[in-house]
Length: 434
Image (cartoon, rainbow, N blue to C red):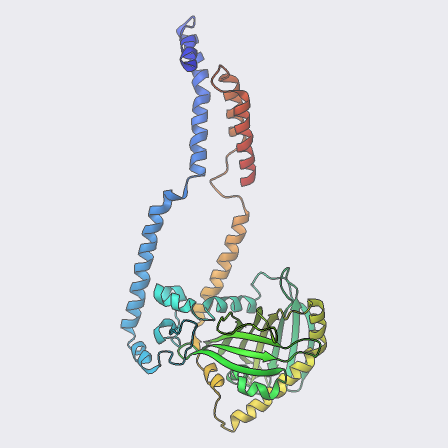
C-alpha cells in the first residue's frame, strides 16, 4: 500500500514532464539496487553452479586414465610376464592379513609419466595402502632441491679425511624437533654399495653399537617396501627407544631416493620400556659423484635428511648431536669400508640387503613432473594471497547506491538505518576481498 500511494502521488503531479522526472528519480535507485544485487549474486555464486561440469570432467578423466592403463598393459606384454615371475607378495604381512601388492606386481616398472596418469584408481588405492608412498618420494625430492618451504639451513660442520668429505646443516622449524641435513662423499664407493649398506640391518649390528635389536615385520617383494622394528640403546640416564620404521627405495638411473620414516602399527603393542619414538624421519638421496682425486665418477654422494622426537628436550638433544656428530660420521665411514670388503668376498646377501635391490624405477620425466607440481603449488599459494579477480566490488558503487536509496526511498518503504547497515556490511566484505 505504501508503494501504491507513492506512485499515485507521483502521477498526480502538475504536468507529465514533472511526473516523468519524479518517476525516474524513484525508479533509478531501484535499478541501481538491482544491478548491485546481480553483481553480488554473481560474485558469490554457489558451488552447485559448476557441479554438473565438474562431474562431467571427472567422469571423462576416469575414462581416460582407465583407457591409458589398459592400453599400456596391452602394448607392453612384458608386464604380464613380469607379474607372472614375481610372487604376489607371498611374504607380505599386514594388519588385515591381506596382500598389499602395489601396481599389481609392476612395482619395478619404469614410470614414464606422473603416477596418477599411469594407473587406475584401484592401483592408486593400493599404492596408498603401502607404508611408504609416492607422496613420501615427492617430499624427499622437495627437500633435496631445498623447495620444501622450510626455514634456511644453518651450517654446523665441514670436515674431511683422505677417503671422505662431510658437511652438515641444521634448521629449527616453528613446530617439531630440530632438522638435520648432511652431505657426505665417499671415495671409491658406488651408489649401489651405499644403498645396500644403509638397508642391511644384519650388518648394521656390526658397526652401530646403539642398535640392540632389529627384526622385519612386513615386506613386499614387488615394491621393496618394508616395515622393520628397531630397539636402540640410549645413555644410562635415558631409557632405550623403539622404532617402527617403514622404508622404500626409488631408482632413477643410478640415483636412489631412500625413504625411512616412523609408521604406526597396532600389531606391536606399546610398552613403558623401551619408549616408542613415533616421530621419526631419516631419508637419503644417493648418487655417483666426482672423486676429489682424479675427477672421475668413482665416488658416491649421500645427502641425508634426519629428524626425530626422542622425548628429550630439544636443546639438550642439539647439544648431544653437536658433540657426537663427527665421531658418528667416522664410525659410519668405517662401517662402509668393512661392508665393501664383505661384499667383495661374495658373502651371501641378507634379507634386508636383498630387499634394498628391489626398487620402484622412475625416470627424469617423472622427476620433472614432480618439480613442475611443486612450482605450480608455490604459484597457487602466492596467488591465493592476492585479491581474487572478478569478485571485487567498487566501494563507491555500494556506498553510492545505498545513499541514493536512503534519501530517495525514505517514504515509508525502507529506513536509512537498514540501508546504511547493509552498506557497511558489504563495505567490510569488499575490504576483506582486497
